[in-house]
Length: 163
Image (cartoon, rainbow, N blue to C red; front, top):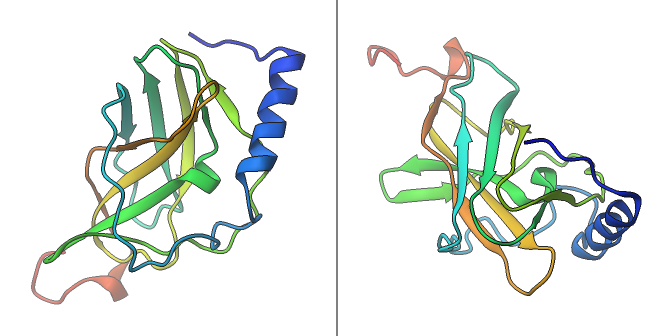
């Protein structure tokens, strides 16, 4: 179901977005070595589509099955994680200007968007971590998507591995 945001709700979203964004670029935030936050129990489903080889973005669907309206801005609150032999690690984002807008995702609704693939992403297995905020109430909702394979190009392939 697609809903239009009313004028007062749009102003609220803009104000919350401005407050949430300490910086205007995706490169601002915790260290890449910081521990990854665990998933929340909140019933939010995050699905990503398998991107084409050398794609610059990933199509993403958020489905809010919980009771609360959530605010999101995946430019600021979406991060790829790469699978390594030691576990999952955050991929540094490109320093891209982000709009200071928080979009609403009402209970029972879904939203489709896309998330840019950072230049630092090499061929491998990835998932998307999203952090959303309840419009009314404290805390964050952290959820991860299904795993996908990103292929960056011939120079990035391992010879003889079939990758």
